[in-house]
Length: 262
Image 1 (tube, rainbow, N blue to C red):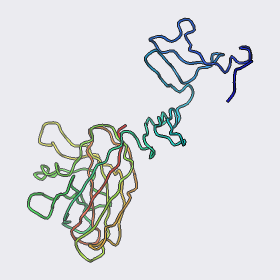
Image 2: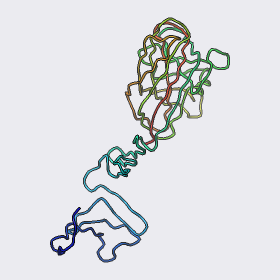
Image 3: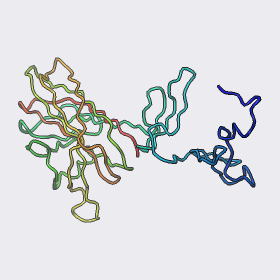
Image 4: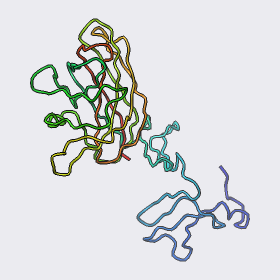
């Protein structure tokens, strides 16, 4: 590191830092920090506050705090509007959403079935299973009639604008026959106009999808889904569907959705 010892100001002023307010110095209002020739830095200071504002470009490392070994503990990424924390550098607003169903019984091979928000015995009498079509992907809209009331088991209301970061599925069945399971994480608009259409779904979008093969009761297959559309706006609902392509064996499933609030 250099030293200013035995050097005159005329040869070192460019390396000196000062605030832009040369009359009042540091005050209650923030003043930008400049070098000796007036080049602005990203720093602004006041007597009670401190601010960082990129001067030319947003970057993934606008602000960093490291430990003694140089590993980042706090990073402000102004390019992606994300604050990352910890040695794993995950978003500070990271959350986990879990869908989980026990004994989901498809009414037809190749039919998409909703997965509940929590462990629900769908083979019993307390819960009603709801399907979402027989196409390649789940239906993009739906009016479930008198079954709409049971959507409360399956839908998660999105309270903020969020980004889906990862989706992992554990899947198994209750029989020895190997089956193929398809998974879809979906977002929908849900009608809430205060009329008889409340609860109807529309504008379905595939957020993530994937497939597990050779699934039976002797294994737990782990599948990382492929993100297809990561951004979900506030007011949407998120649902998860599972499809037994092979037959109608019961499905046991747990789905973990990692997301962060924007």
